[in-house]
Image 1: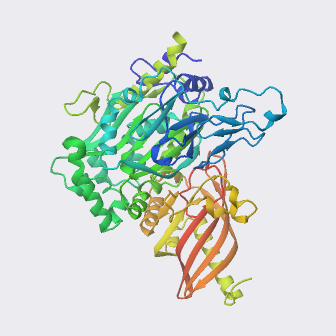
Image 2 (image 1 turned 180 degrees about the horizontal axis):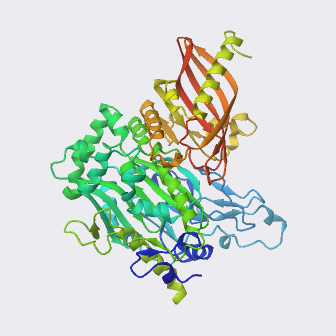
Image 3 (image 1 turned 30 degrees about the horizontal axis):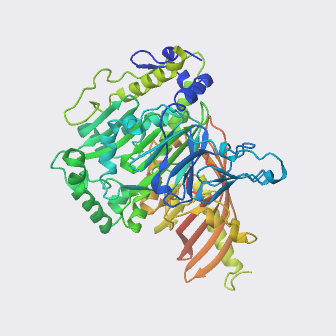
Length: 426
Length: 184
């Protein structure tokens, strides 16, 4: 593999085109990043009842996330121990057994092998307890967000999330019953490298006034210039948001008001959003009550888009292909008919039918072409905007700067480089 | 078997409406096309899931019926698109701005509308299903093929029609097209 330190320079202001396009780099990413990090699998609201399951991915590895009779959550690799077929073909559902179609080996939702139909006809019965689906070795949940890791010795999830919990809680604790995921994710295969959607949602609100000028109004962009912050809590994790003045009216600062559903969804919805905001200071404190989030990123590939209430995962499918998933999220205690109005804030703006995201996905595809140009490798991409301008802040954990500072991306690539190099140099 | 009041003339006039609509869309006359939509339009595209087969439904057509795959606007799930007239206006406006980069240069589309079937008539409102095949091409990219069904409610207005409800079922199992944000 190419030397990671030749791909990303010391301060990560120069990023090689090969980072995005080289097959050996991608193979190293699979092992050293996706094999060693906490990866997002799903939300507890997707599997409320015993027998509920959803499919998930850890990079390219297909995983079944399921809840068993005793209420425990399990994550198993979706591949039969006998001949390797997937034992689950549905995107979600409720079941007692996963049955391989080839020879009907069947597994409980927790992944234990419970039946081998052929064993009656052979003398030596295999030890079924050793032949269950391969478990994801580490599985932890925080505020309903479930993560798995292939790395036995990884730090606890809460430590991994670190100070990002401060920013996630600004949203997750805003609602008395937390959030829930709405239905199935939108799934979308794009000819792009997985890291560019991640970078886009980690802190790149810079592109908004330009790429999205057809849709995002100038006042919204000015608000980001006036009140916007970009934060990196630790390399690879980051958030962007606006911190509005203390006297900002609820229609300006309250969650949900800036969306089309918030503006056109009717008086009852607006009343609900007002109530949410009225409790915000008690629930998350005065500083976070004034936070009006934009984008969040959790290393390596989870994003949360506050402004359009969506969680997203960028699942790699090779150096030049990504399967991009996004879920609409709503406050769990909102009345059902208001949830249906609120979900449109995500559906029609993001995902494959999204008014906004069609410009992003176009850019991600075009960037991949730029990353594959011959005879341009001596021109790495320039990531130096705002170099060294980030600083600590009295009220906000992490390093803080204006949203034009690309330190969020430099920090991501420094961690990425060091992760790739860790085993090479060991 | 069709309802007694579905005459060849009615069938013809609704087919002509769809051909005109397809021509406007392929000619990129989206502003004119918007005039074919009723201002109380519901325009949506359900998500489509891969589901477990229910053993109790074995032997019945309901076991694998298309509708159970759909995650539409009336479900508690998440459709791919869920739009009213405001969203369509926004999409039309966007199309005529120079920074609508996903269509700059614009995609070339050509669609064939077929299998137009009037299912029901209620007063001046017609429930109609139709199928489409659409070829989509942009410079420097693969060409893409879209297939699906539209489930419409058309309102008769002064001898012409307005689209009052459109639900678009896309047939691809994995979405690997550049956009599902087209007017379909």
